[in-house]
Amino acid sequence: MILKKNQTTQNIDDIDDIKQTSEKVPASFYVQLPFIKMSRGINSMVQTYKKFFKMESEDMLSIYIKKSRAAEIRGDYQKSVGFLKQAHALAPDDPSILYTMAIAYERCSNFDAASEIYQKVIAVKPDYAKAHYRYGLIFIRKGKFDIAIEALNKAIELEPKSSEINFRLGQAYDRLKEYDKAISFFNKAIELNPNFIQAYKNMALTYDSMDDHKKALDCLKRVLELEETIS
Image 1 (cartoon, rainbow, N blue to C red):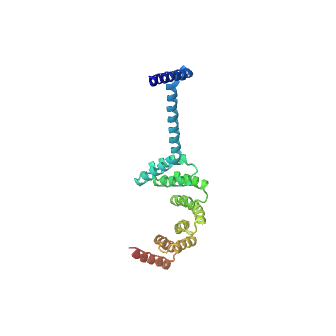
Image 2: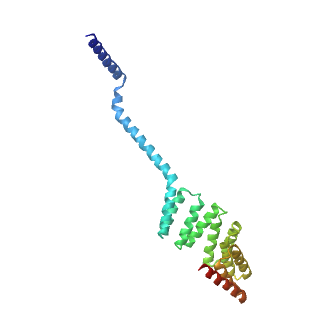
Image 3: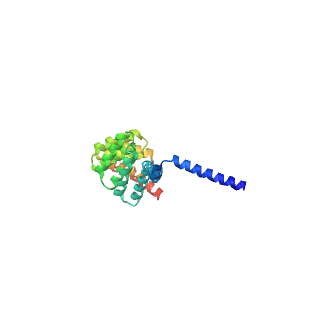
């Protein structure tokens, strides 16, 4: 009976504690409780969105670049340009994105847009040799050889051991009928790349324009030798 009495007393004490606790909690708490829970849920959602937008600024760049490459592989260069524009918006100071965009414009045959983008690349990174080189090629295509030579000379200053840039300078000088300079650059291209068949072919044409038919023939013989070796 004493045990039961103690139990009863304990139960009464517990009830008193609950009453005292309930009396300490304002009634408004019970009214506000659902809103507090909702607020916590909204805060959690906000944090999730913040994480998402943080991911976008850091990771969406690589996603756009991958999509542009996939579009390029499919031959959809317009879409490639579109994705690169989105990538550029996320990384406006990255010259490599602009450079890739300019090449995509070239493949769309939009050479005016490409030349503008190459100029932007050079403005951001003046020592970007490939941008100077591609810019020069556009003006060879347009027949504006003086501008092409200016761009290619800047490229060759940055990459003097490029057989391709030397070759293109040879082409540009040949179009301007500055044959000695053309031969000099063709020879440099061959010195850097002894198997440069196209350089021999162009040099043969330049020698022919100079009426030096023997040297033109020597170049063509070398072309035949190289073609037999490669085949």
